[in-house]
Length: 249
Picture 1 (spheres, rainbow, N blue to C red):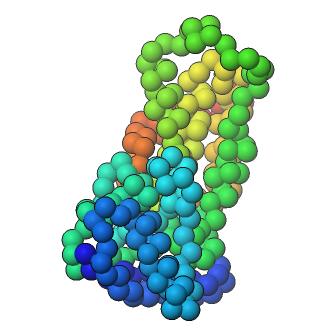
Picture 2: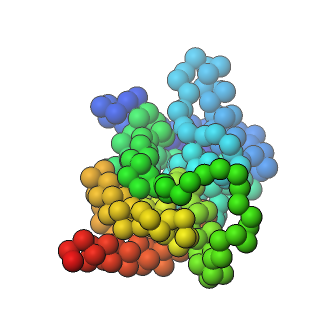
């Protein structure tokens, strides 16, 4: 396969970025998208040019580092797939592919395709923990959890914090991520002591980071590579209303 890549290049946070066109030839259909960027960078390095900066780590769809927008879609055209697991067989010979970073006020560009997702860390720090004592692992049946709650908690816990929901949202909202982190703890017995404090603190951290408000467009759930459902935000809203009313009383 021979492809044309139009890649966002930006030297730093304070510099002006632009799309730069590269031709990449003899691309294997079995390559992942990140391996395609590796090939491009190897050729740029051999030519004495600056390689394209992009985030990556496990390349197994687990860590959430590979945050790039491909042809206007976070992580690319395949549903429930991270960019590192997106293979070139899903593209055609001669395609022109646009590659950009996450676009959100709360995710400032560091360099090229790398953005600062520290805002997510601040949301977690505001309430993504429990005070239940730790120690040796308890027996699986020691704390009964209703099956629907366990399933919903596990579904929310699948969030890898990649930020695709933010990049897809027209408002730049991080509410799906925040809801997933609140929900998976709030549905379990161990998460009850901080439940009200957690939702208030994490919502405040979300807003302080500069994320936009949620208007339930649903683009976040469509873009999520782990399939976190929009109903998770409904659980967050219910928890938040209960916490606010409890404080007022």
